[in-house]
Image (cartoon, rainbow, N blue to C red):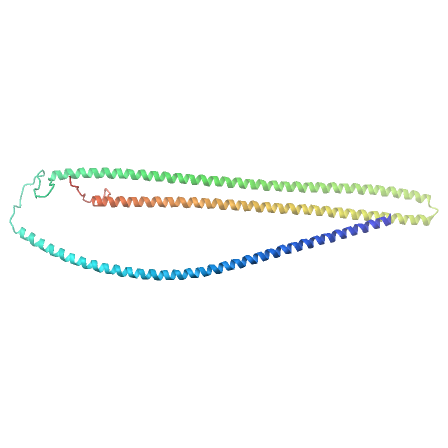
Length: 386
């Protein structure tokens, strides 16, 4: 029995040594493979860095050439500007000379008119005359009208201008209301988009939270199963130990009975006693070694499973966080684009309204001779009747 136990212990030791050597060889092979992959990655990265350097050198040369072209273009543009300035200066001098001659001619004409007016003033005329509002001036001018007709025509023109101004104001108000409605619709659409994005984000966060909770529950269940399995194994070990104790007690009882029958031969009994003690020690050592190896193997399995589960959880968390970042960036880009489009539409609407108002004021000024405002109080130009 002792020899058999010794042989089993040696075989177990050799098996453990072979397993350790196999694991070391496996680890060496994996390390060599990883070193090879790392070297390939380093070579690939070196090639990419060299290609990037060549591209950057080409870009630098191209940028320097473009800078030289820009300097030459600036010189040509400066020369053209100087030529245009010289031409404009000459045109202004010619225009000033022409204006001076026209002013001299206008001054001569005015002096002549003043002389004629002074000559006419020397002729005696009837200074006092009865005023009749319905009488025409009879000055020999075309389309002469009396004072009453002028007032009537002035009122008609003023009413027509007021009606046209009111119609234009109503049209402008209608366009303004249409534009405000359009902007309000765009704002509502943007609010709906933001609400939908908020709902999607909340749903995604809830899904991530539920997934994380499910993972934690699965991990807790796995831990509970491991604890139950360990407890069952411990209980089984205790039962085996109890059976072994009962068997040893039985053997001791048999030994004591044999000792009573073999009391005459004390040396034989002593030798047998020592043999049984050695056998018990060998059995105890074998059981202890087997239990230690079993416990170590189970601990290694549990540790490996926990490491795999922890790695899977970290990868899942990283993937969820990355997905959340991408969704958030996409939502921010879309919201920024919509906000920019809305600002551009509002700016375009304001610019269009200002241009329309300026155009309307310019047309009214060209048509009536003053601003279109009813508070300006300027004189109206009376159109001549056909």
